[in-house]
Length: 562
Image 1 (cartoon, rainbow, N blue to C red):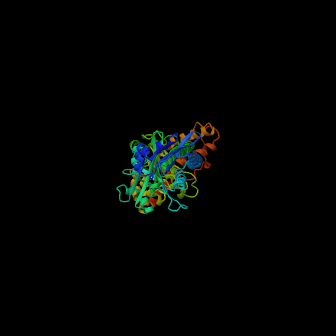
Image 2 (tube, rainbow, N blue to C red; image 1 turned 45 degrees about the vertical axis):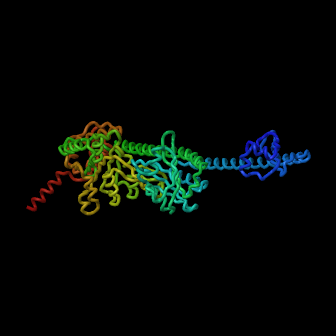
Image 3 (cartoon, rainbow, N blue to C red; image 1 turned 120 degrees about the vertical axis):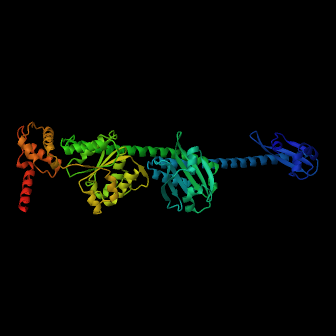
């Protein structure tokens, strides 16, 4: 038929000739019985686009007048047919242009929505909104690999109600999931999933929320170069959504989402490193500021201090938890720093925290960190001390002042080496060596139920008892000399002599404030000294009785009792 209608010239023949030439057309039943056949071509601008057939019952040819009428009629049909074809063609072109325009709009909308978002949750929410608006897909998820091996982080949006979408974030095992297939193949996956299929349990939330027995799932890989960042997972009970045209567009959308995800992950890592750097700088600044108020090295030759240093040397190379016990001002932080410096973790700075100096409400956030929006005032993500001390040591001073309700979380970190930031359910792995210190009697606190027994036993792996200054009087002259010359140099004073009587006087004192109190007394003495000989007067802050008087009083009491 096509060959017949595309003839460039007119055709005239009787039924017998037509039947001999095109027998298949006669057998097709398209033509009623006729005697004579004529075909006039339909042409416009030199282009043949069809033919106009005329059938005559009898077998006589057309007269000249009849043929002119047929020719005129064919010309009219040609003009009308051309106009109809042009209109149809224009409509097709218009529809195609409209479709391309709509596709371009969704791509622009997706690009504008996601490239300005650096938070994963916000990014997924915007992607879901645009995909739902254009395709009417109701379940949209972005799946990324978790920092924890074998785990997936799923950021989902479900449009049960178009005006109130449900946002959800969860962590699941990767093994056996459809997402695992895409991670391995790096190819799109399209399938119908029945609620009784073996893979259905991995999509339990999908079936529970929508109640349909069959779901059509489309999983698109999110690629950055040759690296697979994650998977864009779409689900709908109507499989007609995923047409060839729509899938082509969804692939283009996935490419743009990949760029945004890559940017967001890079930004997250930059922020993490930036916050870590800020915290490290603050800690180092704090440490440097404290150098002037702490003796730069352990000073002491007494037997008591030698025993302490032997214990420090013994435990430093292990990763065991250390509990430093001692009165206020005995130098517990200095011992902790010595343990860290002698350990295999000395390549990174020791992180420290005073539990008594931090308000109870902020202690958890400072230790474990928090996510943005975790509580009022949490305008940005914060890295906690445990995360900051990864591969290093964490010194918890005054651990006995830690609130009882926070102690289980500390115990879990010590046992499992993992924790969660406030406002997040994501587990963070950490490798921290804990050094704790306290001036309180933790054993008695356990009896009084002020401190958890399980945490106490976990901290008390290797206790070091730091003696008070009164139990190591032989070290006092060494400390006095070290403090005097250090403080005098800092103040620009020239003090090069300390009277022996001054050293004897200081050695006889009880020093309830220990080394810190001794340092403060020496600082006042340096301030009051005129000349190059240290002068110790009543204004130096010594207001307590020497140990000798105390012993004589006790001796008199014993004699009276006798």
